[in-house]
Amino acid sequence: MKREYIIAVLLILVGVFVFLNASKDVSTYATFHEAYGNRVKVVGTLSKDKPMKYDPEKNPNEFSFFMKDSKNVEKTVLLLQPKPQDFELSEQIVVTGKMKNDVFEANEILMKCPSKYKDEEIAVKTNTN
Image 1 (tube, rainbow, N blue to C red):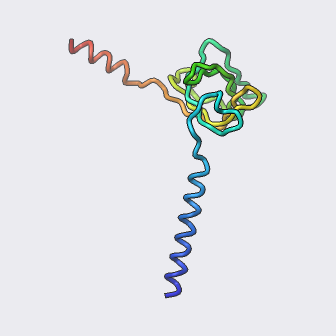
Image 2 (image 1 turned 135 degrees about the vertical axis):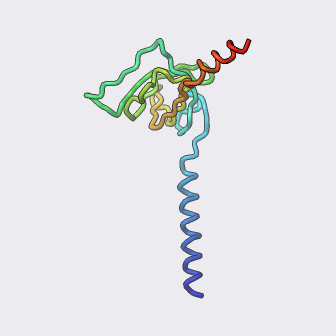
């Protein structure tokens, strides 16, 4: 009987530990304006007309680019990771971090890239008409 109580208590402790760690990184979606001092996720698009800076020989874990948020506000984003492959092709970007001195410092990035099926869908639609 005692062994069952010990196992039950251990399972409860593991459950509490998992719950607390999972809820630690719950970032809300925001704009650049709302990102000052808060860790948030900002959804936006790459400003393709502005320069991107990445020098892997100098610092392989530092990549900067310009991004427009959902309110069309443009800011510099400093990603503290290597430049993602096919970054220029992304349709939408989600960066996680916070604003520091008018620069959004991000430590996570998600990219929505164009679908490889998009052209095929267009071709199918035009062929059926």
